[in-house]
Structures are given as structure tokens and as C-alpha cells.
Picture 1 (cartoon, rainbow, N blue to C red):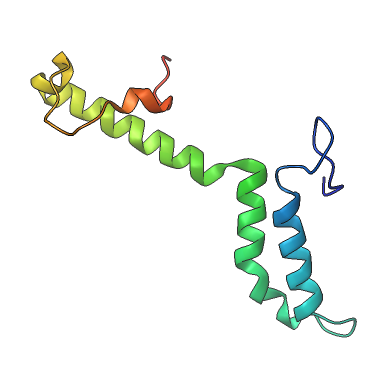
Picture 2 (picture 1 turned 90 degrees about the vertical axis):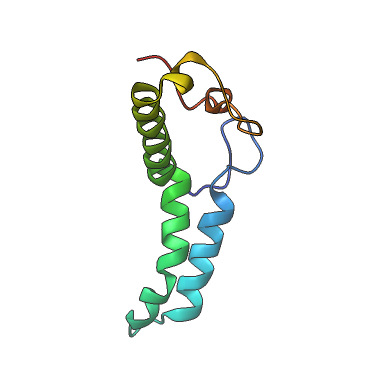
Length: 98
């Protein structure tokens, strides 16, 4: 919802995105025509992403599949040996056990 109140009071996490989207609609549309609402697609996408995290989840799944693919093909990687400067992606919290 776009009430502006978060779960524990205060501003909700997506309310600023809602305000941006609403401001765009107000500026680009009028009562007689909705022709300018296509200009608000980036704001709509940001608000939708804040609510549902679709892009974030897709990116996490891509990282997880690349990690699993590399672990299967590279014996040094699977054993835990890392080249200098390379960090362990498991520390990001994206690779949970399934």
C-alpha cells in the first residue's frame, strides 16, 4: 500500500518511490488525457522493484547458478582455493542451502 506508514511506524520503505511515481503522473497527465503517463515508466519500474524485488531475485539466481557451474567445472574453485583478491561470494548471503 502507499499509505506512507511502514510496518513499525514511520515511512515505509517503498513510499519514496510511490511519491516519485505519483509526482510524475501528476506532472505528465491531465484530466482529459493520459498520453504522458508512458514518461513515468522508469518510476513505475522502480516502485514495482521495491515492492516485489524481481530483478534482485533474478540477479541472485544468476549469481548462484554461475557459482554452482564454476564449482562443478573448476576443481581448484571447489576445493576452496581462491586467486589473490577474489572474495567468497557465500559471504553475500545469496547462496543458501536448498
